[in-house]
Image (cartoon, rainbow, N blue to C red; front, side):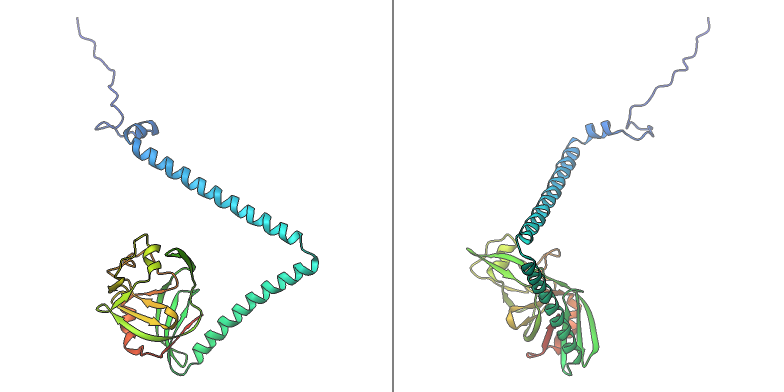
Length: 248
């Protein structure tokens, strides 16, 4: 008797060597249960945050409509006129500062906070155009109290230019904003990078530092201006005390 050949083919297991089939969701879930759980938790958290924002937005809109509905026509028109006047006043102020910077015959710095550009200029001539990061405006914790840090607007003057060898006394609220305890000695050398400019009113223009609480590429000092190290190094010799810096 002749042996009958077995024509049945052995089907390889999913994921086995030589198997070109793509593993299905079930196999992936069994192979990486931790990844699946993490993705699921992240998705739920994002959906919950989106839902919270939608609810708050609807609540604010409802409250605004309720307040406006309780006003008389005269009060509504007066409120709208006040808001429009405030917006126009800010636009006029910004435009006046921009024109003042362009017409300044002396060497000056002009920072457009909305576009994130800083220009070293004289009599309207752009000597160096630089990209900058503008720190956000927000409330920060300052010990047992809170402090509102605003984006600078208006005119400031240069008070001092710092190098990496100079120490800057990092404010307490900066340490707390970074989730760090404020040390007794808050003076840190190079805390504002290799080159920094201290302005009147406490505003700082700094480069990415290698030490201190600002040593984080994803964090910009609230109310501050962060520029590239090479840009600040190039313009620092021109920034004597008293040079005007316009923020608009």
